[in-house]
Amino acid sequence: MRYAHEVGKVRAAEQALMARLPEGTLMQRAAAGLAAVCCRLLPRVYGAHVVLLVGGGDNGGDALYAGARLARRGARVEAVLAGSKAHPQGLAALREAGGRVLPADRAEPAVRHADLVIDGLTGIGGTGALREPYAALARLTEDTDAIVVACDVPSGVDAGTGRVDGAAVRADVTVTFGTCKPGLLIDPGAARCGTVELIDIGLGADLPDPDVVAVWPEDLHIPLPSPESDKYRRGVVGIVAGSERYTGAAVLCVGGAVRGGAGMVRFASVPRPVELVRQRWPEAVTTIIERTPAALEKVGRVQAWVVGPGLGTDRGAEALVEAVLRTELPVLVDADGLTVLARRRDLLRRQAPTVLTPHAGELARLLGRDARREEIEARRLEHVRRAAAELSATVLLKGSTTLIAEQDRPVRVNPTGTPWLATAGTGDVLSGLIGALLAGGMTALEAATAGAYLHGLAGRLAASAAGSGARTGQAPIGAHDVVTALPDAFRTLS
Ligand SMILES: NC(=O)C1=CN([C@@H]2O[C@H](COP(=O)(O)OP(=O)(O)OC[C@H]3O[C@@H](n4cnc5c(N)ncnc54)[C@H](O)[C@@H]3O)[C@@H](O)[C@H]2O)[C@@H](O)CC1
Ligand SMILES: Nc1ncnc2c1ncn2[C@@H]1O[C@H](COP(=O)(O)OP(=O)(O)O)[C@@H](O)[C@H]1O
Ligand SMILES: [K+]
Image 1 (tube, rainbow, N blue to C red):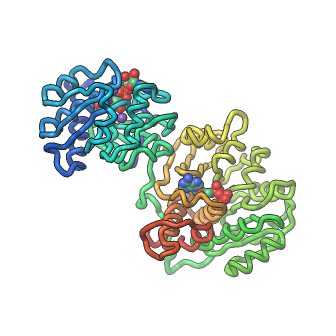
Image 2 (cartoon, protein in one colour):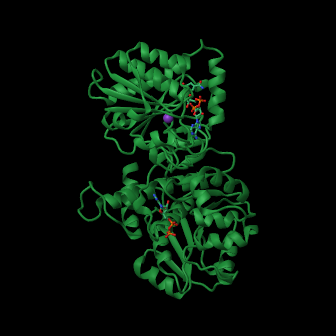
Image 3 (cartoon, rainbow, N blue to C red):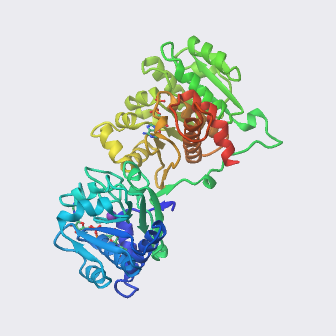
């Protein structure tokens, strides 16, 4: 499961395929796949207690037919209908197989004591927050020991965006049909899915190019040093970060670049951050600069620039962001650099690649006008796409699901990471790391993708290794732990 298509495209593909097949074939394929997964999840199908939550659409139809299949294999199958209408043929099939319909007031104890619950309330046809009684039934899945299997999409999750507006099913496994849906890959929806299993119902040839792609380790083509390598060929990254007031971000950013495989890191800033970087990372070549447009002249040659962490947002910071963006080299802008860009979007008019790495708050500032942080977090896919188009840049939107967008390309979803990364300074490590990969010759999209993947992996390794030294259990981490774990993250890929 790595590709996802927007809901409209899934429906169009389904329709094209259905026109060539006997009626009901697709639903039977979906139900057979769903039932097979349930059989695998149950220790014993015969005698197992299975409860179906059934909405009024085809998603409920899938659940009813899957329930009929389980009933024929000896399961005790009970259906709870969310409304007066349920897929009539599916209902007849369930009854004929020995399943029964429960009165509404029996739903709560049935779900609580079931071995397995199939959520067939809403699928790709769900719109907006779940209404009653759907919402109350969805909530029952939060408080049961039963295995919860969502049919196509956990009900309450917007299949197209991952938005969750109110009650939603919390699934252990989501069995999705034909192709993955974006909402299964992007938080908050993704967090409701458990494991996602894809059932092939034959849509393949009717599906267009994907809208969203989940990144796989084999997609990352990180350049490795060879006998011909020297420090210049491996890539020199220039970092313009820190200020008299903010020094830590510069140290972390340089750490991300050093451990990110740069052949050389050139660090340019005012005296205090330069002194601290020198102490912590003697490998870096440092230059003291003034915060003026001519600042970069003294720094020496680089293959890519990172600008922004801890830079401040005053006129001096603006001069540095401008100087970096005026070069014809790949540039990554992060943190304070993004705040500067929000008032100087003209600086984005350039030919060389630009990577922006905002969190939702920074992206809200960059997009301006109607954009709000909460809205961006709720509808990450739409906003990251809009940002890539409006800002003519590769945009990496940070947060619980990191997304990477470039105009006219499928949006990439980073599968690694951990909520333990939500701590100050980890973003600075990411920008240094991506800067090193850019300097190493990767394209903007490749570098941002590989950087997000390695950073998320390093966060996970650090969180599981911290404290006990064991690889089980988790503990809080600081941004420097992510830097320390980067070599291990690289090792898992080689
Ligand atoms: N179209 C096809 O060819 C196939 C569709 N399949 C299934 O069909 C599903 C789509 O079916 P439908 O188009 O009938 O749509 P759904 O069954 O996903 O949703 C429609 C039903 O949910 C209700 N509903 C929608 N939003 C609601 C809300 N916020 N609160 C309460 N009720 C709400 C509607 O009133 C309607 O009864 C897919 O997700 C998949 O499970 C599969 O059988 C494979 C083939
Ligand atoms: N809930 C979360 N789950 C997983 N990762 C998260 C979560 N919140 C933040 N992150 C990650 O933590 C890092 C934080 O970066 P950022 O917000 O720039 O912090 P800072 O500016 O302090 O460095 C990003 O890589 C982001 O993707
Ligand atoms: K569902």
